[in-house]
Image (tube, rainbow, N blue to C red; front, side):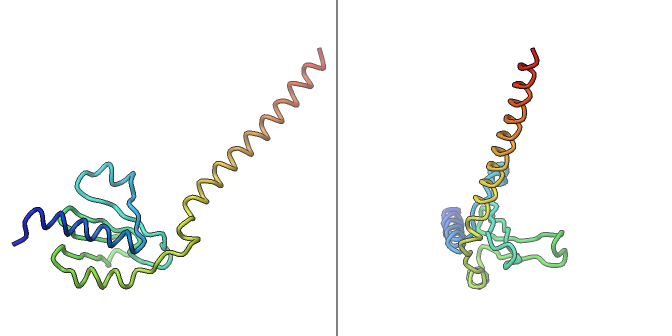
Length: 134
């Protein structure tokens, strides 16, 4: 019989294994739900189960009715063979997949900065023209 300490240990082992395979904790979702951790893999185009949920007992679940309502992955905490089999088919993220989120954020901020500069220039031109009228 597993004790609570064994379940915590199993959960941490699984969390570390998932992160080693390329999964990252989805902090905004995980912080609002106290007893589960949402994980996301950057290889969303190469892996069906790119977003999984890790429960406090070590159970891993994937189910996305929007992508495929008939498919669900459920790996119970006691089934280490199924968990290891799942990890073996998880692709390692490529460099471009790893930096995709950072590049997207950088692009958005760069666009915002350019728009601000353009608007400031246009407003400055109009202010200059209005002042020259008087």
